[in-house]
Image: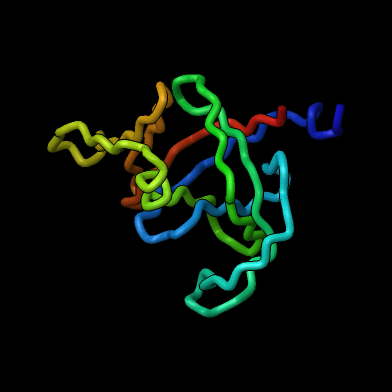
Length: 136
C-alpha cells in the first residue's frame, strides 16, 4: 500500500466556476495521481503562465458516492479549488435548480449516473460544494 492509503481524508471546499475551462485544485496532497502536463493558462490575476501538472482526484460527495475527476489542474498558488461548470456540462452532467425566492436557500445540483453534486449558495455569493477526499 502506498503512504497515501494511510492519510486521513481531507475535507475539500469546491467553488462552482462558470468561466473556468478546467477543474483546479490547490492542494497537491489531494491527487491520487498526478502527471507532468504543461499547459499555457491564465493565472489568478489574468496573466499568462505555464501550468505544469494535472491529475486525478477522488471525492466523496454529499450522497456518499465517489466522484472521480480527471484532468484536474494542480495550481498551488491558487486561492480555492474550482469545479468548472462548463466541463461538468460538456461531460454529461445535467444541472438543476430548485425554485426558491430565498437567496440563502438556493442550491445548484448536477446529476450523472446516480451521482449528485450539490452546491449551496454562501454569503460570498458563490456556490460551494463540500466533499471528502478519497485516496484509494
